[in-house]
Image 1 (cartoon, rainbow, N blue to C red):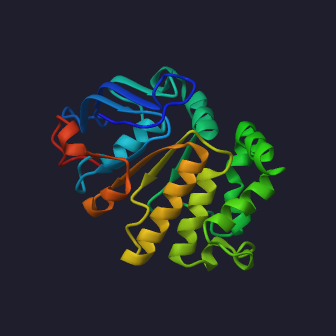
Image 2: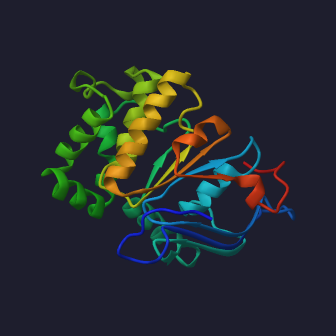
Length: 244
């Protein structure tokens, strides 16, 4: 179903098996996916209209949600066998997230927002330090590569444009080299030129770090930038009208 570079560990980056998810109190499932695999280093575009379950799928892959049936494996670890605290710790160590609304802390500076994963994950902090000498140096390097000039680094998130917030959110997701990056409609508020520029930067950074990227969008025109494109309604056997 998907193809990409494999790491030393032969297990896929993401593996879903007989996945079913229902919201509490509802009989009808939102997602019913027999199988899905993303290998390490792959850049996967997941398309689907609003209500098809794209955000729900990312919530399951990140361990924020737990399947009603079946299994979610990330880097060979079955997330739904872990308790809530262990899933949170695993996500902090191994998964970077770019949210649709970016979810920056408005009163923190750009640098402070980017460094948040290193504050909560000693492993991410150690990887950032090993790569750049310190987490702070790693944050600066990422921001420079994502076209965020130093004059913006001490601004608070509320002082940034939408495009600047987006690149800050990407740097936060990438710091400390998480092995899986998930992006939930991060380009929906950008015009075509800025969208294309951001995609080039994001794909380039994931390729440089070897991260597996799962990028969801309702815009099929973005698919050509990715090594693999998947249409979620073709994978999902459940009706999508109640999906998130």
